[in-house]
Length: 239
Image (cartoon, rainbow, N blue to C red; front, top):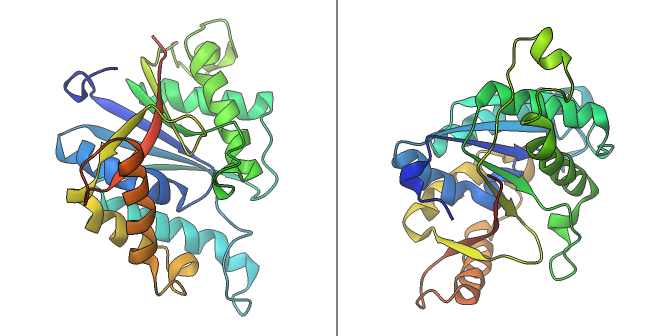
């Protein structure tokens, strides 16, 4: 696994606004504090989400983009790219692979974070079909699409985007984590990021308690001392 001192840029793929904050915000706060530049690519605007039926559906997408932008700032992220795919209808198509490969070639990250393409029977919410589709397309975009100059040739010949090799992938929410990040010291920023998604979390009076329980169990699974909080990932060598 690469040391964070070897990482200059990280690109995070997510299916919906708030996904990255539930899964990785504590870790990302630590990276940005260390001087690593982090970018987000959010595939949908989460336009099928929310709990207030009085809010017109047409207002949900711009609201959730705004919430995600505010949440990102809580953990030091200021480069966000929204692809605008319809919420709940994402499939791992060639078109999505091309869109994700384009962003990889634009950002040129050392490390990519993405959702798992596998169903997690122990925790069903991470296995939303949009998450799995984005995870599958992201892995294909890392290898082989972004690094192959002859894949989606228009990216190079028409858009001037040369091939790029991502060195490492961190998969969030999957059934086989092999690395745990202690986020105890950045937990308050993770909570602030999630509170910024008011359309999704305003009704959750027990949000902090829920997160502490979940991250405490993760820390125990990773062998961290009692009282610590951790986010879990499956780290893959992609070089």
